[in-house]
Image (cartoon, rainbow, N blue to C red):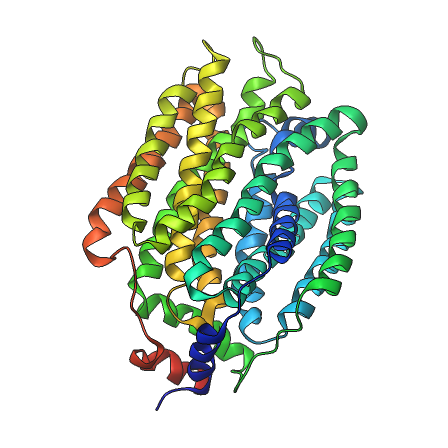
Length: 422
């Protein structure tokens, strides 16, 4: 027998209205502001290392703490989007984030700092609730475009976080970065409370333990989720490997750039954000595999230019553009594909997918600072190229099992229904 949540999911997909442009824009801004909280630390690592007396080879643990909290939040918080009122869930997480950001800003020692960063990461998964909510509100023929637009906001948040953090740390110290973010997060919580629709689930709702268990069931039943999550883990390991060690390299002799100048390199990656929406449209047209292959090839090629940093800053800028464009194109394509399956389980799908994103980001951060300590910038470039080549090989090997589009249907997956119905 077909589950009640399956019935409601297909009804929801069939009747989804068009999302007004201003609402999509607000989704994108909120997502960008929230994800930035995880990435402010990248250009601050040398300042944090000095204040808390952490070695260059170990300071990546600050970023890893945030990513570990993010992974835990994906498993425990994001699935709630399929159970609770999403408007109240989003606003509640943003208000809790304000408190966590204030705790980081006033951290007196490394223990409190790491705990605060883990909490900030745990709550930053509101981004995924926003993406899943936008996908639910969008009509099926425009879902890729809407997801791409919101993901563009995420990309801008990641990149501009480095610009803002670099400027503020030179102006008022690293603590001002988190205090400023707390203020803007509070303002965004109020705006979303006023604008977001009060979207209630239709039909029966599973219990929380069954909801969490169904995340793992989705991995068993959906090959597209397993494969795209594996690709995400590898590309974001490469992404984090680059951005975590960049400040250590650029702030050291002979370049000796300021935090503001280092943060400005984030602007070079804005091209990636601009490409994200286009990637979603290509996925809507059935060109997801083509986009993935091109994106992964560009990602690998970008490391050739990034490796020339000592000789040419221009080569670094072009390399950053290629790296961010490639990663975000693949990321948007991945999400567009997984949102085509199980309309009733979009929050759980994105939770499962983004756990691997977070694992990759944490792995990239901790391995990058270790590689930099061992072999300098050359070691970081070789590490990033290795992750990128592995992603390209993995995609090529799994193409036969994961077509560019999916035709999965809830009624053909009895295990998930049984899991939710108990």
